[in-house]
Structures are given as C-alpha cells and as structure tokens.
Length: 267
Image (cartoon, rainbow, N blue to C red; front, side, top):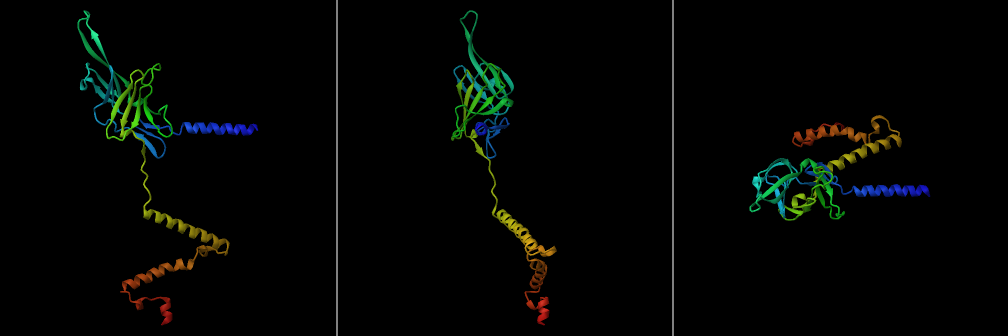
C-alpha cells in the first residue's frame, strides 16, 4: 500500500511539473522565444525604425524601442526637457510643475529615466492566462531594485495591421502592446515532395526485398555465397539485357542484328 501511494505521489509531482512548464516560452534572445518545436514568439519587428512607441497616462509618458537598445532623445518628442539616454529599450518620463521662489511663476519640466534594457527582457506567461489563451508578457527583470516590481509589457495579438502601446498602470509600470507582430507563430515545416516519397518507398521496398529475401534464402533454403541474393540469375542477366537493348536501339531496331546465345542456337 505504501509503495502504491509513493508511486501515485511521484506521478502527481511529475504531472504538476510538466503542466507548469508546458506553456513556458524559452528565451532564445531578447526578441525571440520558443514555446516548443513548432511555435514561437518574435517581437523583432515591433519597432524596427528609430522612433520609439509611446503612450501617455496622466503625468507619465512611456517610450518603448522593442527588443533592441536605442538612443532616446527627448527633443524628438513633446517633452519639456533636453535629455539623451543611450542604449535603452524602455523609458519613463514624469511631468511635474516647478514654481519659483516667489510662487508667482511656474514652469513645466519632464524627468526621463531608463527603466528597461533589452538584455533584461524575459518572456513570461500572464498570471491570469490559461492554456486556451496563451497570453504572454515581456518582463524587464533585473532592471529595477528588488523593492520595486519589474516593468512589464503584455503582448496582445491583434488582427489589425497596426501597433499600439497603451499604459495600464504607472505605479507598477504595466503596459500592453497591441500588434499582429506579437502573435504566436508556427514554424513552417516543408513537406516531402512526390518524388521524395517515391524514393523513400522505393528504397524501403528494395531493402526489404534484398534483406528479407536473403534471410529466407540463407535459413530456409540453405543458400550460400551469391546464391543468397534473391533471383540471382535475373539480376546477373541485367547487364547483358541492357547491352542487347542498346545494340538493338543503335542498330535501328533491327532484331536480326542482335547476337545472343539463343539466336546462335536458332541458327
């Protein structure tokens, strides 16, 4: 009874482990992850140009360069600052109002910081996703102190031919990316052509014929040497038959010019 319970426990553990890792997307590089041998996610084309994807919510603006690090210049966007950040993938800008000492004048200022590099990208399954939806997110792990949550960008597969970045939460830095470029893709497997299938069938049949026939000749009929080859006389006569056929064709298909042992016997 104890052994049965132990086996059931081991089986249940293996089932839980396999189920938990069934939907994981293994990272190949910051742009690509593989679900298995047939499906993958590739976000390399999300932002292929120099322009960052952007969205604003309240006093916060986010800029996403995809899975590659690029140079961010605040002067390229409607920001009240002159900041240049080199080698960044995700940028967060906060807008605040500063007043002068006399409190009679004020001015607007933006502060931009990098909150994610491409090397920190990890592909994770969304916490509320299931095996039917398979929704994934890009997490910038290690880009923030341990006390803060890692910035995440949820990948929403869209049927529209456009890419949009939307901010969901400015406290925990959660965004969502709508695009057909983040959908799960299937690896194209090339099927065998008709000729390839014919060759496979031919070689399998030939191998079965010679190996199977040779074994029967050896064990059932006691054949030895070249006699083990099935229908050895027929295969041995093929070169002569080919020669006679060539002579027949080259001589203008005149049968009397073909010299064989049988023709001599008839003479």
